[in-house]
Length: 204
Image (tube, rainbow, N blue to C red; front, side):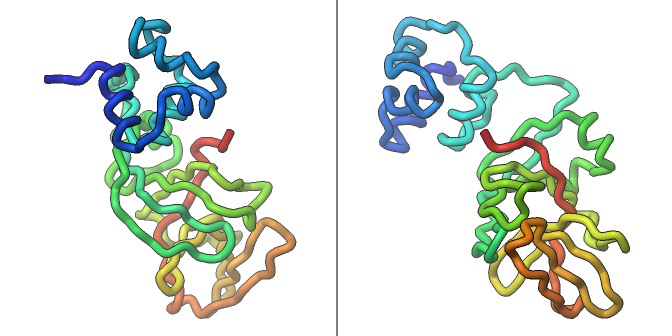
């Protein structure tokens, strides 16, 4: 039996141990908002902003909360990883859920669906270009920084970080866009590049 959006919301909230009133406040609504949605069907459909916030917090596919599927969307894996704009975060590369991304957006970025994944930024070392909570689209097929430099997700030790990489012969300058963070230079062979990163959505 397919769950209704109301049933999916109720189940996911119970699994997280969070009340609907608390979720209502989290999305900037009055505390009865989601209870009315579940019990009275008002509103009939969750607005896009509220639906996205709830899906992110509850680790749900937006379709479960009533988002209409679009034929031109591609299901891109969203990894349960926060790429640190600062010190590298320990990688736990499991798929949190699939996220619908317009095929045209991937095509415009030159990313094939098979090479695309999504991650979230943690920290402020790449500010103002990237901020804490921003969502990145990662092209795992693009692992060679151009001469002028670009932003990549990298693996160092056991952590993931997002930095601007600039090749310098046998070394690579690992730069932060925040001037308070120093540039590091590492041997190119010692750096594992996961893929090129592009901003997909800005954190609220």
